[in-house]
Length: 395
Image 1 (cartoon, rainbow, N blue to C red):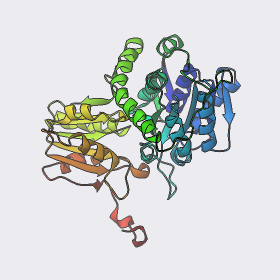
Image 2: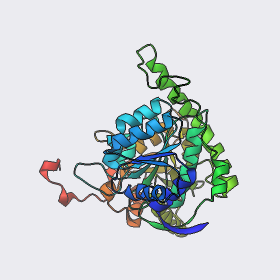
Image 3: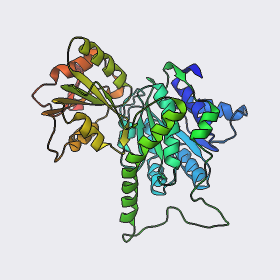
Image 4: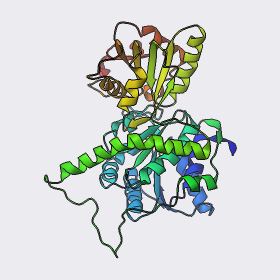
């Protein structure tokens, strides 16, 4: 069904179709609209779910952990400081091998306080053991939630999944969307039947103490499963396409005019829409440029990235996050994809842009393509304003 919806409302609608039995969240901009809508659906009797009001994001994560541990499909959403406040429980959920879907409405992390978009929050938890999928637009945000539940609850996976959508840009943006129908969702996502759960009739322990003789194996098991996820996501994506008619190929990466490109920008999230517009414009002028969009940041599709970019001359990696004191997070992964390989680009340059919601304009992307030449740029902040730097900020 074609509808014109705000991104947050669309996510709430698709979560409703997934029929979670437990929902818990704490309001934080720009995530709030999602759970407001879900709370209203529960109050109106449109969704048969227990919506648990809590006093913090840590509590919200704890409630949905308990819901899944008890054998009930569960859901939560958060953003920025809220996600970081959940961090202890986020690691627990993955470590306990519990399937859960969380929406991260990406927002900058304080201080200074900033409510606008970048991807620092979810990137900061990249090592927690969660699957992370990044949406370019609201149609992807809707569809990736279905794919995330299907992945997370598969008996061979049993790991939580985070769908990341850029705050305000997507959460508050209006788009015409193809909203799934309930019968098709039911076909793609059957009722959740837990592989294990807390049950007095069959007692078990979750999250037990593991001494040095056991802990290493638990980390290895998650790492090994995430390798398997790289092969499983394309199968789920193909199944999704067969039911809903929207084809995300392998749902790991998206290649946009990369086959003959000499210069390619690598990026994640909504900025890819702007990059595509610039690529189209430059292509009309005869420039061989392209985009490689990363959808699955965790697990990271190194082999797919290598095959897509091995014949490209120059690569620009555009990060909307920063690893202070080191190289940018996505740039590190792209460079790692070529480590030890016989073929690799001559240049892999790193650019950081859009922090704290600063606009990444078509001119910003053109500037990146202009700077992308035979001289590698280790790391450069795009659209930096030197006049705003002060001695107290290290400028």
